[in-house]
Amino acid sequence: MSEYNKLPTIQMNSTDLKEVITSLINDYIRIEKTETGLGYQQKQHFKMGQINIIASLIGEKWDWLETGQCYHDFLKYLISKYQLRGVSKGEFIKAEDNRGVLLITEEEYENMKNYFIENNYASSHSGEMGWDVRFAEFGNACKDIILKKQEFHLVILNDYVKEESTLITWYDEADREEFKFNSVDEFCLKINEYKKYLSEENGTVQAIDWIIFNKEHNE
Image (tube, rainbow, N blue to C red; front, side, top):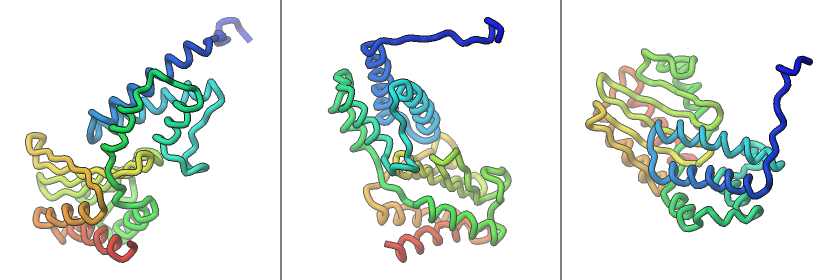
């Protein structure tokens, strides 16, 4: 193999590794506390990728599908095991307290998506534009439900890493509102209020009814 094709060996001592991962976790906490909506999703997952790369260098791996461990618990494990004293536990707790509830499970999301595709209210292609009911997916972590009628948009962001859903509504960016809830019942009451802005003709009212009906009968 040519010398030009070889990657250089990189060595880091334990102190430097601790400083790097501590800095990344503190960045992650800041994002959890200050960022919202789509900007939050993008920045959070970018920072998770950086943390996961450094964690792999010390033989650690977060595997949500295998362990069922949420990402916050994985970070708490790293903080405790490697005594990352530069991470503010108080700020970490505040970030956790800022979390909402998960409105719709992954199984419910898939069932809902299949139902609306079969009834020709949504496209089978994730995020395809031109439909008033859309299911937008970002890997396995985020699966969003987007409903619209003319200029009105209602978006339910479902983050399966953070295990919470966020409601975003707007006519334009100036009217944008964002909500998190402490209970599924509160979430359902709020989205039900927006049915008057939607329509049965394009399936958006049926989408709200589907969510509320299934939550009431699966509780």
